[in-house]
Image (cartoon, rainbow, N blue to C red; front, side, top):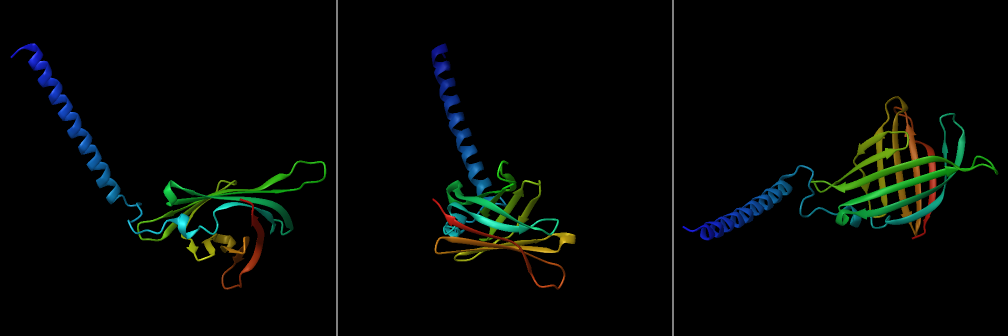
Length: 194
């Protein structure tokens, strides 16, 4: 066999091996995606569809009781965005309060959350706040509402309920200790600006 025939054969073999390798990688990726434990099922409702009533830019005001028990007012913005083909929805919230006529507003709320579709057909949610706390919770999403909460240990149970009606977002944060009734510690009202 001449050198040119051997070189041509070698090139053909290398090209064939590359095609087989690419095919094997493609099959492995498809198999891994089909079996990945966090993958949304083929009939999963996308969070962007379930939360379409919230998507957009929002502005408003609110109040909350601080650690000292005093009520403080704040201005707030929320940006709710569909991500990853609608399989994820991000929430970005920012709140400020006035410290006086000649002072810059102080940030009192800086939070991020992601809601995703899970394998069971439900939704998962992770939150991160400016104090460094993170939470993994299961949100309850209704036709125009979202409710989520968690056990805050010695601070009791916390629950946040957001309702949107006629372009107005109203959110209430509540807390309870043991068998006590829920007590409101935060309230916000926002309107859609985009």
